[in-house]
Length: 365
Image (cartoon, rainbow, N blue to C red):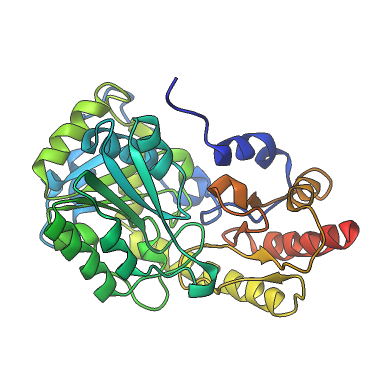
């Protein structure tokens, strides 16, 4: 078997459902159907359109200037989008460059397909911002795909519009597809990047209802690109995997996106307050350090080098005894003293979870 389980998802399976304080999740706190005011009584539970509902595709396309529903495929979350894009863009032996750290399937899927994967590392010392001067030298004649995510998961780092354009220019110059995960684009508090796919047909944008909208349970994401070859190939793959999306999820996604400004305004206000809570806590820590997250709902602090503790023991103690969920750095193939700290939960949940982190570390040291 070429594919292996993602360490990240196994950690979720092992611990997330037995906790009280979730400060590891990468999304705005999940909503319920009752929060949405959506009438689902008349939803037809039939097979849907292979590309996604036409009205939903048109609604999504409004986020991409110059796009129509013909440039969108609705997928079963961004996970299916990643798998279907990668599996159509590369073949065994091809070279893929993936910004790192990142959501693991962006590098585990091409590895599973027999590709040569190079991780384009972001460093704490450079505030997790990419040094694009290094990228050009990484591209080889076998490079077929580059994957970047900004706002970044798990670091919360951003790039400038000029850097995004430089990435696009490089993709065009070297004839490489650029997969740009802009799941958190609507949760950028300083400046929003233009949708990457609108800059070139060498670019494929992906996004989802899971993170900014707090709707991971409806499993709705999408692909946006003017690259007709990519869209046709993705459709071929998903007809062998999911065939269509679920009818209830598509209905909820459409109704929420029709009111997207109201949902996002509430979510941004919620996240900004939580980010201040985490920032205030970090300022008083002698044993942890971080890079302030510029956007999104996650950050990647680390235990300082002087702290004599086994990081894995800390994360497991948090999960089992303190019922507080974080994500170890090893789940992102990072040194394990890093951990993902998410701040999408309730204000009370974030405050309580941070208090538990302090108490657990004190217990071990």
